[in-house]
Image (cartoon, rainbow, N blue to C red; front, side):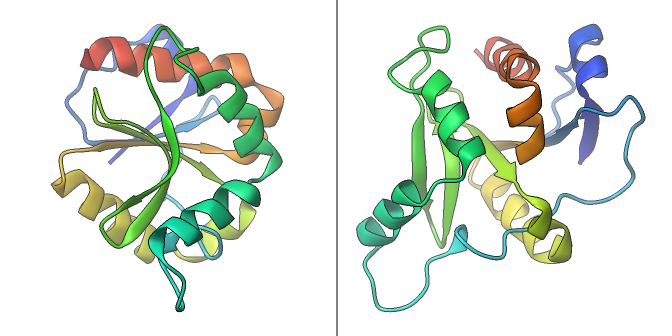
Amino acid sequence: MHFWTLDQVQGDDISSGTSSWHVLSTTKPVAYSSPSPLMGEGRGEGDISTNQRARQLRLNSTDAEKRLWKRLRAFQLDGFYFRRQVSMGPYFVDFVCHKVRLIVELDGGQHALCVDYDQQRTDWLNRQGYNVIRFWNNEVMENIEGVLLTIRTYLFEAK
């Protein structure tokens, strides 16, 4: 897994063939694994159906998810079609563009507690042929244009 800063992504070629990137807004590379979901993502739970769970996740979106969804929905990001809170095997992903096999995940502070689970989840998604790119919620709230630039860069590299 490679970690990129927004500065690196804006200035460097990111077509390295890696299957998972974590984009941070710092200027120093970070040496840790991606954080993991505790609530609201991950494996479906309880007696509710997959569709009901996805609906719950959409209705209970974080502010960061709502903000990014406003910019991704209805082909707004350069004509690419994204879906949100999609069931993929035993997991739910925040946003996915099936055309280029890209998953965009947003992580809150609670995600730092379950690093191993998150890596297992990312590995499973990679084995299904999807690339995973992650952002912290505060990055979306404070630097939405940088987040969108990073997603665009990946979309056109993968096209």
